[in-house]
Image 1 (cartoon, helix red, strand yellow):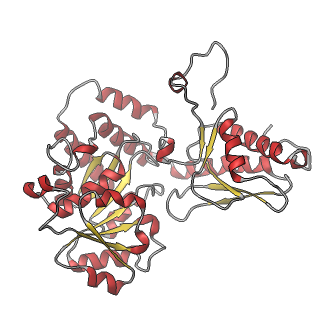
Image 2 (cartoon, helix red, strand yellow):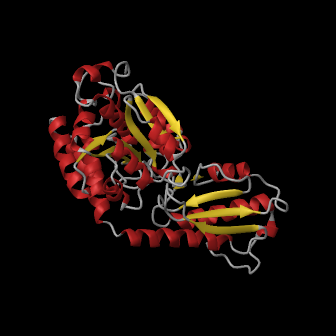
Image 3 (cartoon, helix red, strand yellow):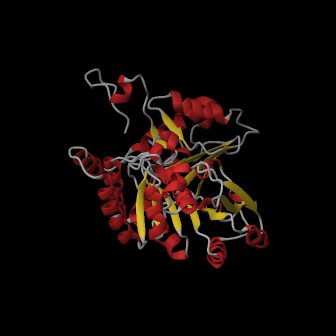
Length: 392
């Protein structure tokens, strides 16, 4: 909930920096700071910060428990999912060869090609290209099989693009296995569903990369790389605390390792159906507050893969209501409290909200502010026809 403006209240940390925190009805986006950690995670990180420990031993111990929980051979806590992609790619290029590791991103004489579907190119694959590999883009199974050769280090699959390409996950894994080439899947924002933590490895991917600071609600600067024991070992050797390694720049500290480990433990014990039900009810409350407003419609939906949680679309008839999406966004942003919605590009007459980052009761504030903004933008005609106040 938004903090009170009482003159006796002590200013928060962000206010002391001259910033305005906001209610997040958008999602677990990095630009919004990811998700909020549970008190148990914060306490675990605080405890971890009070003593020294061998980072190698800590990574091994945390990795063993995480792997056992998720049915993987091995696991590595990383500095976000982007770090997991870089380290996973480096592992496939260098193995445990120290001379090769010290040369990256100079990959001359190494296997330095990564094959992926053209539809799976995304701005985040820069984390793969950091290693110094060349991306080979294909579209069909025939092209994929023809592209695999003596220089192929890895096959890459973007989970959120599962339905965009002509080659689906199971077939992609089969082709990689037939060729004896490791296959990495990027599933950064694809928790929930929780089953993805197990299913992607069970499907046959040699490596799977996840964000730790989104659905799992670990530290924003944490991620996970799961998979084959030999590749996870090579990924660690390409990472900090090892010197002269490409992964030295994405250091993960003892606090983040412990925080991710604790957050995952809590996440696996959660009642995920209860979470889902709560998210739906919060969005239903917001939708009810806008019901009956002329020209305004709301529609619940769930994205196909990435951020696969309940969402609510707010749409308006722009032939009748003459305001822009930018005006709606700015009014929510400049109001009190500040509210941020999904930054995903949409049609000019549509906003998308998701509730899974909301704290209890914040849906009441969001409902009231959305209706207030719409009434200000379109005038008294936007008031509910039945005169009732769903958010009041």
